[in-house]
Image (cartoon, rainbow, N blue to C red; front, side):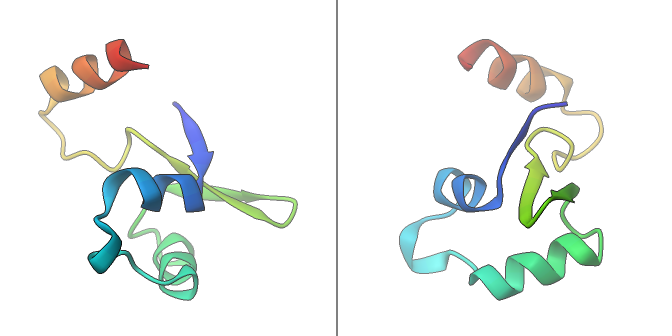
Length: 66
């Protein structure tokens, strides 16, 4: 599991014109549409858990890129 701040996750995976608002992302996190957790007052996204099952190759490439 690799946690990253919700803000950093949005910056990494969304083009500027299509980024969800902070409120929208928090709704997704609370509804478990995006896997993550709140620690203190900050939301974190499990960066690799949101990938579809079966994408093991993608998961390994992402792990190596870090």
